Image 1 (cartoon, rainbow, N blue to C red):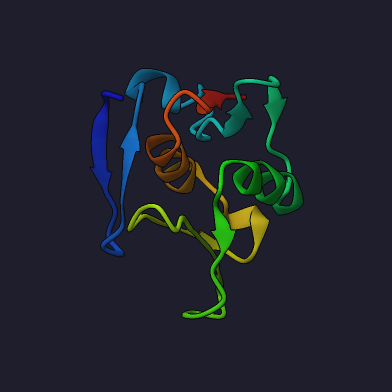
Image 2: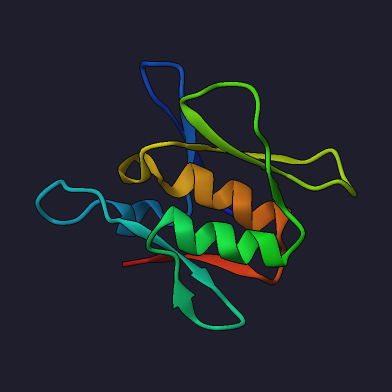
Length: 110
């Protein structure tokens, strides 16, 4: 994935794939969606995502921060951490899922 890294005042960074398309005419930012490529299904909830990740051998990690849902694979050191509130699920978390599951997920503009 290519793009521009945007640094915010709160210390967070995020990757903007297409900066020109990111800003809409009225200043609102475009939204992203996570798509499960084999089925074409848009991930619309954590229940949906957890089912797909389970099929890919990701297990729910029960430890750590209670504000996060976390998944890990026994065959790797990778850990996916997601905010417990799905409304806070954004392109940064989608990017993490896409990178750790190549050819399975894709982030797209809505």
